[in-house]
Length: 182
Image (cartoon, rainbow, N blue to C red; front, side):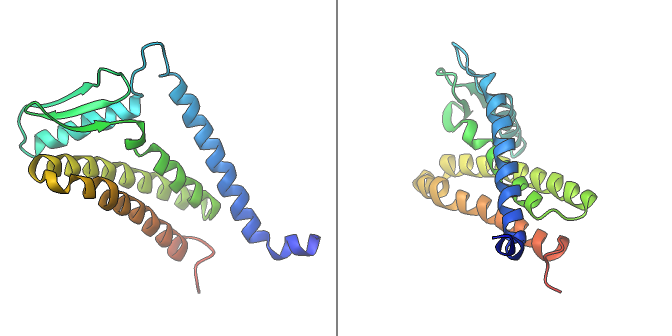
């Protein structure tokens, strides 16, 4: 048994670090979300920030009368342009879960401490910014090309954001970790 553990030490280390950090970060994030589960629920601070920043980008792109307001249910934020409801931004749209997944993977292939931390911060910022652009492009497509909104929301954007995370993982493994090919 000990021989088997030694043989698969790297794989076991990856599994335990990945699952452990994912569980730790997800638990902390869920504890954070519990603060917003009240008698009258409100969207969490990250979701509100993403919604407001998406609205700011829409306005910067030249769209007038951009409004970001809390949905009457309190569970999401509404992004509207000139009274047209374009996007309901819920907790799952704020990129926090994707950043947790990304970070857990990077930690499982931990490299030099400073490089690892910088890569996690830079990658998280890139994922967050991409997510804002995803919401903006989706909102613009709903406004300008409503016939493609279903495809954009269910196929293109999940593929784009998860594809980007996958590419960030590949770059990390191939360039920055001790597991890269020589």
